[in-house]
Image (cartoon, rainbow, N blue to C red; front, side, top):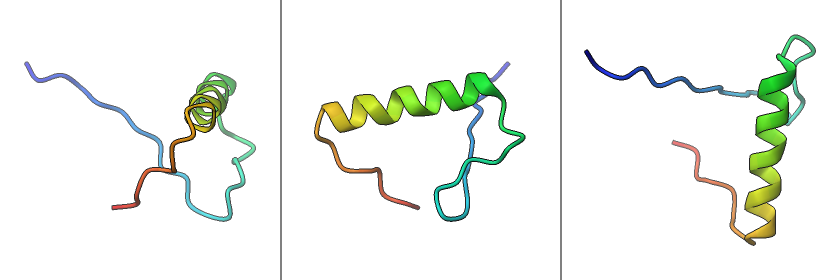
Length: 46
């Protein structure tokens, strides 16, 4: 059986929806902090 991959796509002006689960928001902010600390650019949109 194939592995399931999940993702979140945020569309808009960078605002987080009020309904966004706290655990997803926490993970998103942690990943963003790690990216900034590593001085990496945002990933390209495809």
